Image (cartoon, rainbow, N blue to C red; front, side, top):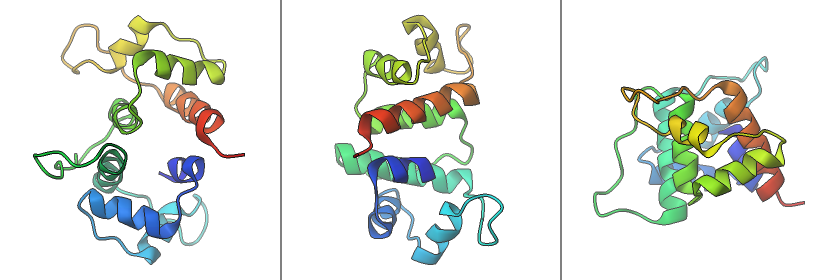
Length: 147
């Protein structure tokens, strides 16, 4: 969440508005604790359900609301879920994802990438490792961050 805020230069009111779109009424003080760096006295780990609400709100902000309304947030997120939600929020196709990864000199094939978006019970499903998500976020920064 901290990285997305930095990449797109979101203000506190906009972050709170994104949370609201995702179905959560957050406060500026609560947001500050989630955005604090680990080790700082104010730091509080953002629970998965709140991160899911933020990412759902980001999808609604960028793509508009659906007829079904605000989606129910997941209680547990893994890197695959975060990557999928960012892909949807930014309207990215496989080639876009590969290009963003390549900006950080991280090469991946389309087959390897598609395995990250399969159902966990599929035989070709692969877990998205921290390294992949980190390189994707670094690539997003290079592509979207205003200079």
